[in-house]
Length: 287
Length: 353
Image (cartoon, rainbow over all chains, first blue to last red; front, side):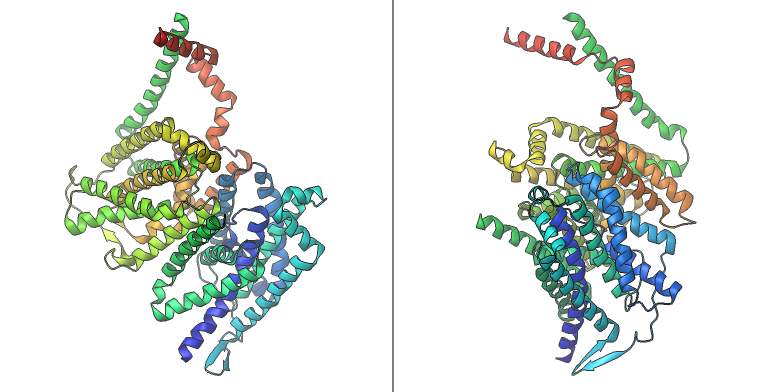
């Protein structure tokens, strides 16, 4: 029983990261209708940024989070402005797809060139601290990360729901032409959303460094799980993405516990295919 | 009128001579180039271009952006290798077996997936590829993560096994040419028109009586079978396969020649492959000892540059360039469009009379 509870909690804590990644992907996909295939690589960039900041400036990894968020926002905005916006005009889905795939290649191999393929960690004094909660042991870094994740998720939800800019973002995602008609600058919103999406991925990476190793392809599995979260949680739904991420994390640990850890990826992918197809069937039925 | 016919014939003859010369160059390369390294790069160009053509049938022509073609290639390689190692079958027969198995798998598994459109299809293709890879890693029958090796031995055509790279070069060349002719045939057939209509607008295609699911299944089956053939060729050439053959990055690599060359054209993957793969191999040989990853980095830069500045690929740019006009008018002596039309009209009139 205690193993089961422990697995549940670990899955929950990991699922938080899938949620955060999914939310970033969701914002980008919802507004521009493009799948950001370099989302995982953005997480990896966030990890290396945290690594650089904490080793060079001696900052605590968690103190780096706001800095990483700002830097990643600017990075995303720059990419949107120089690469994606011009290609949005061509309306070629293939090109947009491979633009982000190419960006992913560029970032992961850029990291390989700059930092080599070594696995790196950021040592902290509290890395091995556990908090006992009944039968369950909680690793302190995971717990802090999860707390920050929740705060960010709520903040993002509130931002999209209540601020003027958030409302503009939702307007563009529902109808870009209509939004332009009422005076919203869609290009500005695109830059903003890609920046926000990238910043969320970067923050997820930054939060991961407390207990995860840093290497050039660290983002790949998170990137794909973010896509699963978007599809399962529903397009444009922040709470949906949140719960889908948690579900995915718990599912993974349950498979690892009850079947075998090496099957967890297989089960995740098959579940994903089934959910995709069933979801589409339901949509067709409703029509 | 007769002059028009003559002009068209002369142009067709010139075109044949030009293509024949290009082919002759490729046939003669192993005669003059003895370096195994260079030959290896050419073999790589051949099978990657073929894989990219397989992708292009589904991605470029039908507009279904698959990112899981490495999985078909890997499955084809596994199916044929296992038949050789476990049942002692002849490699050529097992190649056919691999293609049939992969065609069936693709057709059956993708049947329900074809209700998915656009990005959702891409996602399912990635998930399918990864699921296949994970399945093989977890299956003892497939040799788990350690892979399958093909037996070594004396050179023989029957066993498709050679020490030298030259036979592989020629088989690879024949494979590229045959698959190119097949793709060209498909492009000009009823199926080709149906696929392109589906790419432009699936609902419109259905409205005018094209069954999108049927044609998409045909495209995915043919595409997967060609990828399986490439897998067999790869396995026979390298003589060892492992699940790393099917990683996501390989699927991406198989798409790059088509996108860089021009995904709207059947020749796109050939042009892209001929440029990108030697470039990548050169960068790998030159720089990867100093800076690992630099070759893929520059590869990615080239891809981004093409998409950003030449969205229709190298061929798309060439088709509207002054260089093409120069080649057509001065070298091949292509007559103006009116001449072609006149000749066609004449033909029809002849038929009616």
